[in-house]
Length: 71
Image (cartoon, rainbow, N blue to C red; front, side):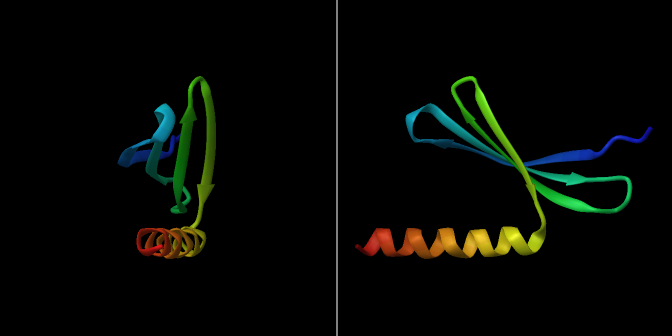
């Protein structure tokens, strides 16, 4: 059985000891997803999203960050 190929894109230290990891995951079928892993202490939340969802999410985060920086 062929495994997926995971490539670490970045690891971000977040407030309160949290960590956010982003990985590009390529499946044998050719499908690629962005895997988000959020670590909060011993708890992990893992999501895999497609490019359209990643774009929408990043646009919303950038809009929030831009408004918070000038607010």
